Image (cartoon, rainbow over all chains, first blue to last red; front, side, top):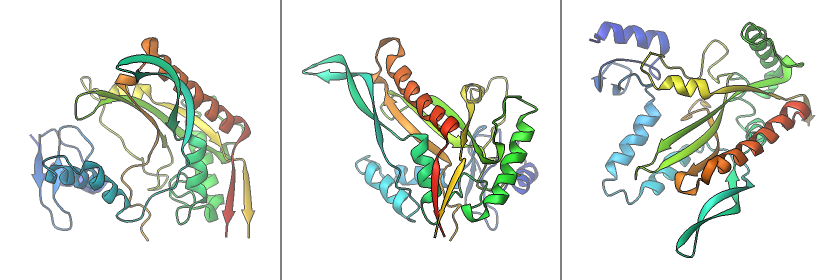
Amino acid sequence: MVTVEKTQKVLEKHGPSIAYSQSNLFQLTMSGYHRIAFTSLGVFDPKIEELASRARRDVKRGNVSRNLHFYIHKKNMTLPVATSSVVIPIKARVSRRFAVARKPWPVFHLSSWIKTAMETKPFEGFFLLAGMKLDKLAQAEDALELFWSRYKAVDPNTPDYPRRTLPFYIHGDEGRSQVKRPVLIISFQGLMSWAGSDKVNSYKTLLANNSNKLCILFSTILGCQLHRMVCLG
Amino acid sequence: MDLRNTLTTRMLYTLLPSENYTPNGASTQALMAELVKDCNKLYTEGIDVAYLH
């Protein structure tokens, strides 16, 4: 049973973006917030909610791609990340039958992400350096050093240059598409949250029967060195 | 300008539909091998970033 008081405490602690509840589709309207929906043990994100509402309005599913692209480009908050390709064995259709062939497959390398996220205005490292841009590199280095000093308590294998090594998660998961076909998704996530060093990007409650536990177990921390900075101008 | 207007901080590496999987996970192993190669290069050699100010 979830009460409004409990919900308010969660909101005060974590803000409107992250709230948890064990009730199903419990909805609440509060002054200053838009509609807040709580789903069973999930992270609530207002952007996801808006995305879902756009999909719901498109009943015939004829404009899903157009709506998604419109939403993504609505506020011009996109990054021009370079697409690379790697040659891998895949099963592809060859004249009415499936056969294994080595073909180029599109990927976004982590190096491409870092280079673009660091060099593109107005972001300039904002998403990877704990909410600081490259003009506050010294403060970002302090945050990185603090992170690796704390991480040492968990794993003594820390990098040689902790002030210039960015920590990342790598995460692989198999989801299901709209037509129930599984899709493997591999992605990276910076550990240094853009919200600041004292906040985490996302977290979920790990319970005994919660499948999220698997996601955490499959996540691995890796380090990436940003060991030379070229300042021009 | 509020830079925090973002859907997620996840950075996609790739998507692979199940109909393109090869037997014994050869596709995912090849993808992960390329990922590890890039990450090892980042860890050992680092990356140069140009900062214009």
